[in-house]
Length: 267
Ligand code: 8Y4
Image (cartoon, rainbow, N blue to C red; front, side, top):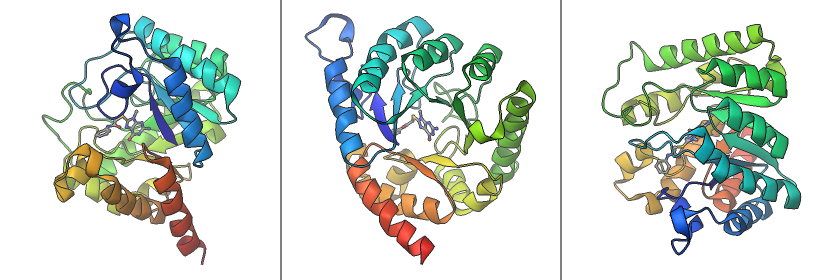
């Protein structure tokens, strides 16, 4: 899953996508489309389009602003590329309009905590990735509290799966994600990575986002633009642990890592 940030403030790639000459840091739809096209050429099966920066410390973005950012990008990708479009949002309205524009998967870091978002996923009949987060993006890295991070994440995901099933979402439309870096210390993240088979045991596809995150930076002691090799190592381990979808900024490199690790797993 390639990451297409439709945010003007993202340090990873959003800042390149926004044209500072334009007013209000508009998202450049053509640039986002070209970025998505390159990822598809490199082997991405999904592209995850997000209009809300969910990095640690980031402020929430309202639905109207998210719509202005993501809908033109989703439409452009849908009209030009053969790829499954994922929309990274927690908003019912953004889900509704994104699905109308061509999105087939909702990636909600808040695991449909908003009842309207839950209702919209039921109605839209799209797939949904349920992610674990402790706290909220703005403050989540300031305190952590777990009895046992693996058990706590597992029971949270089981509870959210049950809520979805009870609301009428078929199990074959669900994915789960332990939420690396979302209210977790480096130690918590590595415990989750090591015990990923406990999450895989839910018998739902597991998506992981490790790419360039602080759990890599904390051990390689390098800035975000020098974390690819570390991200590849973590990707291989996640795949051995049963992960099925890797959310990444670096599609070409990660596809090679997936091919090698898959050959090992299938030997
Ligand atoms: C460097 C680069 C440091 C990026 C931090 C980051 C996930 C996700 C994000 C994830 C799912 C991020 C939207 C955070 N992470 N969705 N989204 N799983 N499902 N931070 O792990 O990339 S954004």
